[in-house]
Length: 369
Image (cartoon, rainbow, N blue to C red; front, side, top):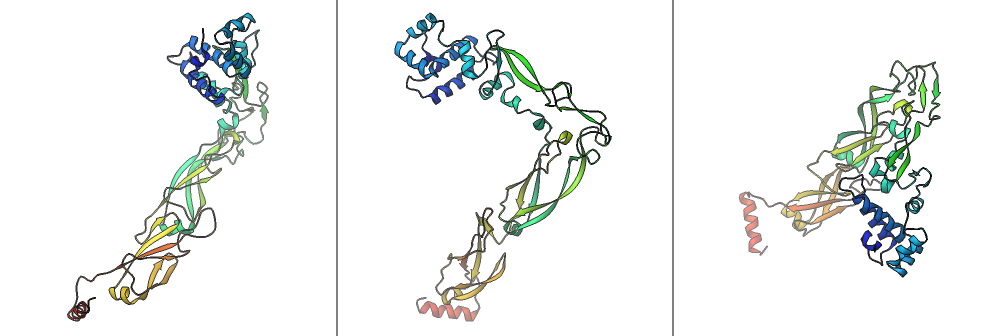
């Protein structure tokens, strides 16, 4: 007798989500259209799924066990029939000609046949949409902190000015395709192990455009776009990091026959700065001070990206001490304000002393300092 749980590879306590996941996995494994597939196991798998995925059928199966199959056959059921499978799956089963409407189950079975969800997404607008463009742009460190506007040159397909992108010679007519009624798609039936499955494909009459051009535009040969060079001013927001990407919608390649353009993706490269290092929106830098400044205290001038600022060094400051200058870091991308600047001081030890300096240090040594 058949053990539906064993066929699906799940336990008797498996949840509906676990059952569905197991079914999808094994359906991919055993589908006869795939290399190494097994039609017999595939049918058994579907039969098991129709029972175990249905709460009422599952309860009956759990109660009567192996006798469930005979009970089903006694009522003309045979467990889960192909008709049940088709109805439960949303295929719209027609017992007279065994044709199915693939419906919304394309995400499970579409890749078996080379259509389904991907086919449905292959609409006129999707097919004709312009390609995205990717480019790189290098900016200075300070420009990445505060933001900058840059002019970039693009060599791309742009909408034809002669025909305004529709591909027709000005003054000529554009007719709606009578075969597809302007949709650009026609229904066809493909034969599969399920029978005939109805799907859609590009109309052969208008090549999926939905319209038929009476006379093609001479400037673009009916494409609705021409290759050109454009200069675009791009605003780089403050706070951009090295390797970050900016997306500018509609600035990619123009679409065919007036379809929407692709997008422009700009990858930002930031030149390094010897004075600063960046951690998130904070900046770090080093500053050297003399021994006397460390011991007695002082005010030193720090050169920041905002210009020179005064930093007070308290008496007794140790080498490695870090000071925080609020609001002198990097601009936040998603909100107002800036990070902070952290200055780490290093006490510079002289590597050469004149006679007087040496005498002074010797006196300090005598004092125990």
